[in-house]
Length: 144
Image (spheres, helix red, strand yellow):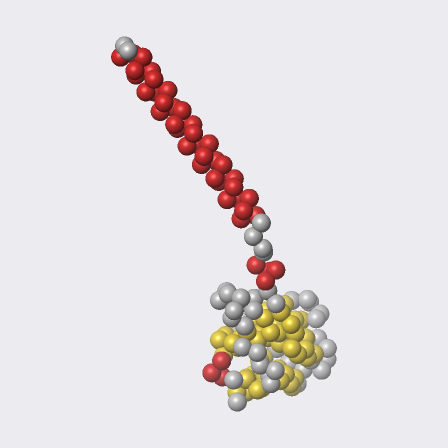
């Protein structure tokens, strides 16, 4: 075989091999993308139930304590959390208080229309606490 034919054959094999690998990579990418699209959504695994709701005496605020496994720690990490909603403006303050585990003994007591006392709190399980920024409500904790 002349050297030009060998060079041409070598280039043709390289080009064919490159096309084959490109097709294989494309097929793999589409296959994986299709598989990822069939994975269940994170929210499908989340379970959440409201344990307690309380309204301020003037009915301007609603406080909810929920029990949920929808956290950044994964589905096996259950938490109780306090959400606060301004019923006049619709502004929502999520997860102001987060406690690991389920705590049915948590209690909510409103004082002076603008102070919410949270009692029955196991301080050693407290993961997060913050005041609602820009709100007229103050949260007070009473641990056990």
